[in-house]
Amino acid sequence: MPTRTAIVRWGLPAIAVGVIAGATIPTAVAGLAAVWETNRTSLPWLFERLFAWLAYLAMTGSVVYGLLLSTKLLDTVAHRPVSFALHMDLAAFGIALASVHGALLLLDTSVGFTAAQILVPGLSTYLPVPLAFGQVALYLAMIVLASFYARRHMSQRVWRTLHYVTFLAFVGATLHGITAGTDSGSPWAQWIYLASAAGVAFLLTYRIGLSVATRMGFVPESRASGALAELRRS
Picture 1 (tube, rainbow, N blue to C red):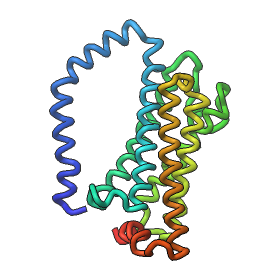
Picture 2 (picture 1 turned 90 degrees about the vertical axis):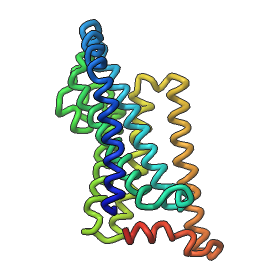
Picture 3 (picture 1 turned 135 degrees about the vertical axis):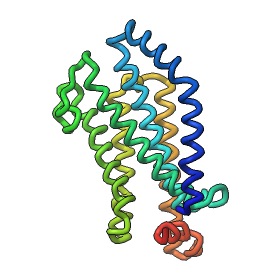
């Protein structure tokens, strides 16, 4: 990205975060300390749920953003380099949140996870398969994120193939949340899963339909593949 664009991208959010943090952190720390003293056993569990939901929403946003990019639907409202950068940032943000979610399990004494059980799929004695869905989804998402940075060192076909792994990661994260999440029975949680899955399924179907229509000559090649072509040149 151009230097000015990069400065705007990182500088303005950093200033905003600094101002907000400086004004709120002292009060927040004091409040959290008081809550910690009275809820030592339940706080890790509450934060696990919070970071899990934030990670899932960030991953969903990244997948949706990527599909909107590939169909060129975002070009009328945002510049492509900015959209592509936000797509990467959402993916990285989701992985970071999911990692914190997993690390917090070490503080939860209700089950007593070990580091090996958190890192290795299938080792957990508590819901091994549902937890494995989430663990595998996180590792797949890490592979996809790494492909962004190694993109110049691999062919376009390999890069695109790795990108398809994103959908497996999304499915794994959704199954993990539904089968292992303590909120999965709540109506609001079910609506989040349903809306996320429906949005991704709709855009993926649209993307596949657009590709098929292009190959059959119903849609001009420039309209359907322009987005991918620009991504390849970036």
